Image (cartoon, rainbow, N blue to C red; front, side, top):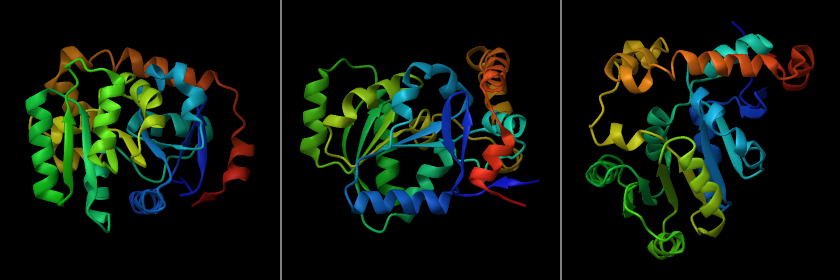
Length: 257
């Protein structure tokens, strides 16, 4: 099956999503961290695409790196241009990989999650990856945005992980990232739940077959049933409705067979 090249982008539902792999993406982010180039990383799964339609212009900005996450966008890519993405780049797998690849210790600030979950996730990051968690703001306590910006900047954070779910985390990043000194801000969804051990990952074989969504659905059917049935159908329909010219996209981006 043909793959999009690691430097290709594909347009889905009005979003330009980068096709790359973990090694290339981590190298890019490290380069930007060293150069102190303000960067926002967003993992575009089907739910993000549907929930963040009002943020499409911002998500297309030069400082935002938008990468594919999940089987939904892979199916959409096959339907739109006949080519899947280079690698599934979900935050739960990529962030631990990134933390192991960074050449120097980074200062990390966590925003979101329940207080005890965020604290456990922070301890895990320090113990497992050796990076320093310099502050935590849970997602349930109210705090003045300017005060939180000041706390994050005072902490000297290099990386800010925002775990508020779609579209809250993207809205928060859009509103606050311009006022943060941290060069890298990442929307991480349920990452803190996984790092803290609160939520169990699917077995490796299910992840390899892109079936983690089925595992999660089996564990949280009430919360996720609509997302993985009705909403995924709406997402695919939206992708197909957007103007597309597969031949022109393939010629512009190139493919590897």
